[in-house]
Length: 303
Ligand code: NAD
Image 1 (cartoon, helix red, strand yellow):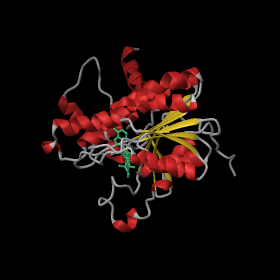
Image 2 (cartoon, rainbow, N blue to C red):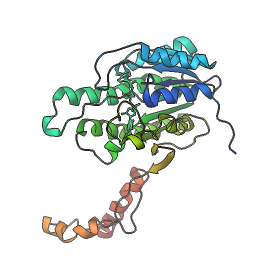
Image 3 (cartoon, rainbow, N blue to C red):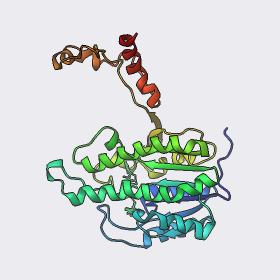
């Protein structure tokens, strides 16, 4: 049995916590003793409108079981205001869960600039603004946990989700760099790619499976990643239905060509099978490891 994971005296912001996955995360953090800022603009899945009652209801739910929470109704694109709510009410911020999101699904040939821009703004700019406002406080106290919400649609691609996939994998790029920059200040940064039954996925998943994908089955991972018990950083985790797995990059051993003599497109074609063969593949964990193979190849020709 592991030690209990508790958040007494710690402040957690969950964006988009007025429903779906964010609500489940906020409730679990509060049950584990955290003071929670429940942020939600309260708009539609398509990012239209606003309604303060979404966040207010979740705050009421938390207070009803004796937990501590405050609502914030700003858009994540005004992330500094969300962080200010945490500071005004609780005087600090320890954990940030970037969860707010919308969909504007359209096949690429029908994609309009407005669909592309709004999805970018909510997911990427919103997560940037909120994290950027929280960052100096996390650095100063030498502790922080940040969780970004990616998606299998970003990792693997999905028809009709070019805007969403771009944003969601962008968040993983952000995760990787913030993990590097945050480490020396004990700010650990991870990303999840969840699957859960919410208004966002209703009608997309067969009803018998949908029933089993309760949002609460995603939150234990998020709460663990938000805790001091978690020492991992830069990770990407697929989670849903009570299952959790880690994702990593895999790269083939590749094929080498003479850099001095140069090589032709036909040479590439001749080596294509080898380039794409994952037998004995490498799993570079950082830029230095990633470049090792190429440097070793160059060295063969410079000795
Ligand atoms: P949801 O629609 O139930 O929740 C999203 C919440 O974000 C809503 O309450 C909405 O009001 C809020 N929100 C939207 N725009 C906002 C803004 N500008 N500022 C503040 N709040 C805003 O959907 P969900 O399924 O719970 O999604 C949560 C996150 O998980 C999203 O980032 C989504 O892309 C991601 N995700 C969900 C699934 C899934 O299977 N449900 C899969 C992959 C990724």
